[in-house]
Length: 196
Image (cartoon, rainbow, N blue to C red; front, side):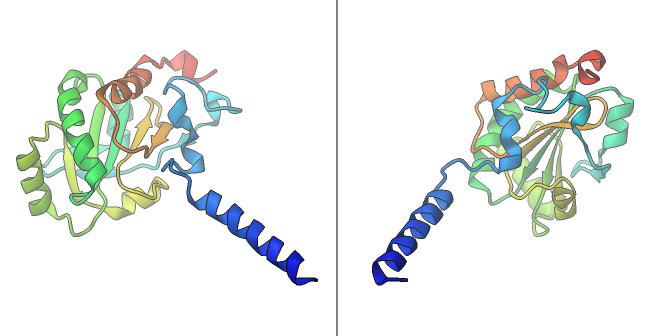
């Protein structure tokens, strides 16, 4: 192979690699559900093709037990927000969640699950007090993040009344309108459109 051909192949590979790594969109490929409402089926899948959420139970810093099974038994959707005390994107989302949660707390369950084992109960209790959280939050439990296939903090997961994941998004900070659209989408699902 000539030097010019080798150089051309090397430059082409570099350009391809650089363009793949410079994607500004923080979503992973499996987070493509961000651009659809929570009550729409994923592209190229029927609603029955949704992934079943892993069962879990957590105790919040206030002693409240929250579990997937209890949420299903209550026939309410569930939103999990994976967070960390040191996360700047989370810090932008906490006030929005605190603003919206009181409007939704009787219609859907929401819990912020800490992902960092160093975010123990004392750290998260102090953070909750300083940031005026209105929503339930746990200390760091990284295993739940792994069970959900979540790879970064500031990820929001929506689970319908039957225990199926309808969206995962780790887009940077979400506006109140974006969170409302996700929450309303979950609430507007009916059993009939979940089983289409």
